[in-house]
Image 1: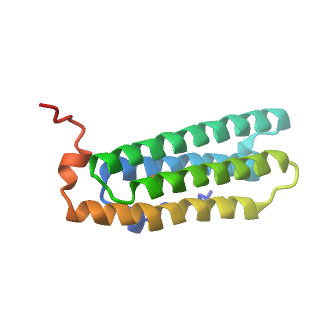
Image 2 (image 1 turned 90 degrees about the vertical axis):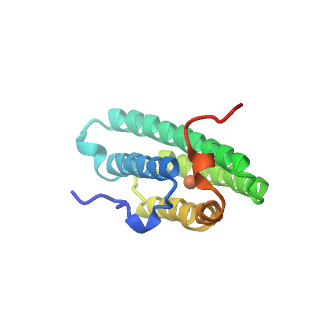
Length: 153
Ligand SMILES: [Fe+2]
């Protein structure tokens, strides 16, 4: 079956940890889409709604972790738009909550529009705000910021 959300290489930002998380989130997104759109192969509707509920919660938590990691990188890099970006993250989380609620309330009549909106929500986060940060890092030293080793002296 074709995936609802195909990752495109052009979305890679060249920041390994961030790219990896974005791809993981897309995998989770597809799991949600599969459960929502065609039951994920289940026939039991209660099982489906429980699984969907779990997946949506996991997705939400992963998005929050991802945003925290991004904000940490921004702080380390002295990114001038850090505060603005952190504010965007708060708004994005609120929007995500709204989509999750919508999906959970509309389990009986599937609305593909909500999944499309969520997809747009996700992509616009990457190609606008994250891309700006990635461009900033390209000019400034990326290695120091994204290396997993701490450089405490
Ligand atoms: Fe991101």
